[in-house]
Image (cartoon, rainbow, N blue to C red; front, side, top):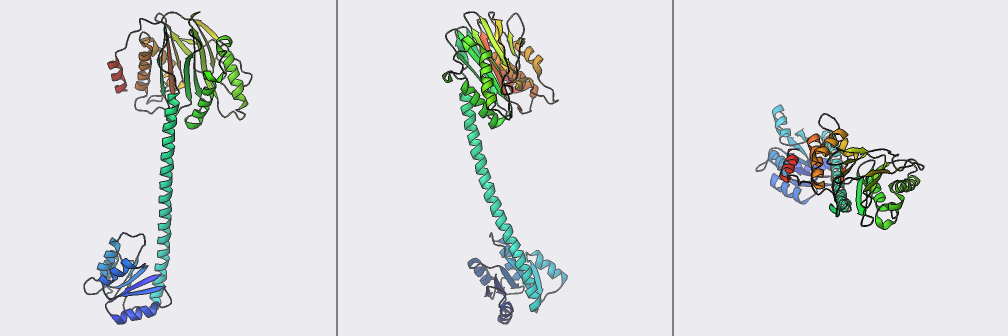
Amino acid sequence: MNILVVDDAADIRAYLKAVLAGMTSMVYEASDGQQACKLIENHDIDIVLTDWMMPGMNGLDLVQWIRRQKSERYLYTILLTSRDRESDLIEGLSSGADDFLNKPVNANVLHARLKVAERIQRIQQDLLTQQRMLMESRDFLNSAYQTVQDDLAHAAYVQRSSLPQTGSTMDILSTAWRYRPAMGISGDHFDIFSIDEDVLFFYLLDVSGHGITAALRSAAISQMLRPVSGFVQDVADAGPAVILERLNQHLVRNNVEIDYLATMVMGLMDMRSKTLRIANAGHPAALLTTQEKGPVEISEFIGLPLSIEANASYRDNIVQLDSGSTLVLHSDGLTDCENMKGEHFGSSALKNCIRENAHFSADDLADGIESSIDSWRGELPITDDQSLLVIQYDNPSAEKADSHLLRQQRALS
């Protein structure tokens, strides 16, 4: 502990230095405030004992100068003076001094006060060390958080880039989709691709949960269903139900703890026979509508969600397609979307929205559904992944919706 004694009287400095002998590492001396300032700037001083009344820069001025310095080291200051009025004590402590001793200084009292100062110095140093460690931890966490955010943003980009192209898939088919994760990345996934020039394969997948875990599981399942994997190469002959059973058995083997489940709707559109074959594993029913009929649920048979029961069976629902048929697949994030009152959007509202927009193109129908969902939830955030897939068959009379109106609807929502 290094102490600086500041007093314009040489005999007082000599007395204090003698009293402090053996108590401290080093005792520095200064005869006035200016000399004290230089010593403080050039040495590691822990405690300053300063006389109040000195020519030029007095003790109060010195204390106030010390308090203005920006330093990690806390400098403990004790004012020495013969002034003993209560107002003097208040003035001295208000200036920033830590303690106050009357002259002549009693050696035993000074020793006791210095022990207090030493304890406070240690506490101050511990606090500074903890503060530094906290700042370093904060900086590390901020850096780690930014790294995670950057990784999530990249993962979201990769996930979105793996989604299918929208627009015309075949001469008489057009598609559109909407995809809105609740947490940047999603447990939802869907795909559309041609098996041959006349058969379109499609599915929409929803893995339970949100965020990274659900997204990884969804990505793993979707990779199995890509054409290059060979997993669905015989789907045109076997049918979607067989593929679901095959996929389910694989997932059950790797889900011993049953810590997640997945729902899926999978189907084929055959342009030769003008039929739709669709199988469902615990997913919201697909909706099929024509210009003559409103949306009808394709829900003759809905099997268990995937990854729960190895012996679960699924069945193909076969529907004849009429000219102008529109198929809508969606995740439960749409119908479960809540408004400010906690009410769900629901399947009835979704059907009404499809009915009102069925005469539009696939893309504008998707816009209309999305706008209705946004109007329903208002300012509330999306709390569940929302996926929507629209496949429109042979609808040459589909009108182009007023894009300006749709933009207005989205702005109002």
